[in-house]
Image: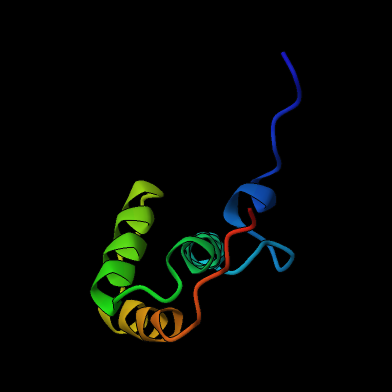
Length: 83
């Protein structure tokens, strides 16, 4: 049997990441992916893609934040496809 973790480590310490940082990393990842795949599409399509992807990562979408991202992504020009 291996050594047990110290109580101070289980309770959290000053070096542990802030609460919610995992959620923000997931949001950033999803927005990055949707930016690559849905830019230039309608806001509704972008918003749905963001919400679906966030839910697949276990994140409850923030409607105001998703709407801001959708507006910005939909205003970007589509990425041209190389032939």
